[in-house]
Image (cartoon, rainbow, N blue to C red; front, side):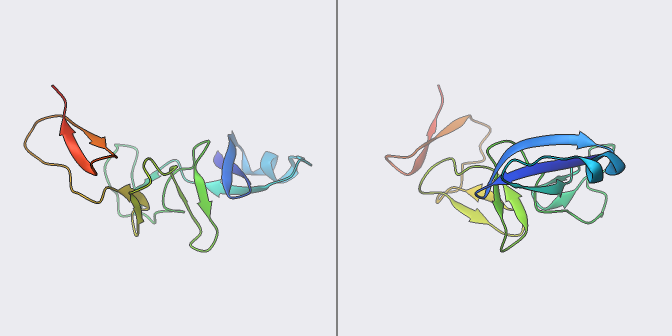
Length: 121
């Protein structure tokens, strides 16, 4: 089985699972482009059936989801931008906050107006 994402204007609008033989004969005449995506790729890392990195080749950055962006220049999928201050980071193709979240065991949420992490109480 393969996973395929339909791209319209740089955005993923549909994701299907299909046998390659079926996909090759699948007729969809609506606007857009179909591209293969890897269910085993996330954050620029390929994962095995056990959920652990397996050293395999990461395919197109991340598994495509509806609403994800397809960057044709870099041939990668990445999630929608969560906040205007965040930037996309290669090679994992995930969004990064301008301030690193504290790693003190507490729970935090991003506060865009202050551009900082706020502890959840």
